[in-house]
Image (cartoon, rainbow, N blue to C red; front, top):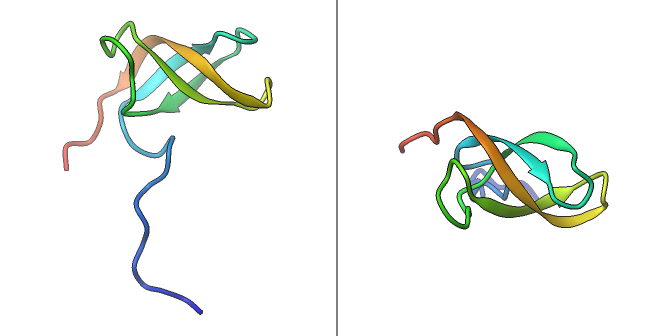
Length: 70
């Protein structure tokens, strides 16, 4: 059964594009999120780390691209 309605974007698909570092393993990666604790340029957020194989805290290193204003 197919549906033409689309569900809302999931985690990692909305928000500003960030360069961030995993606090668990130190891996750096590009992530998207709207759920930043603190100021966007210096805050932290929870996201999946595939190296750690769990949800970890990530520290924002820099904002690469601002979120789309829709």
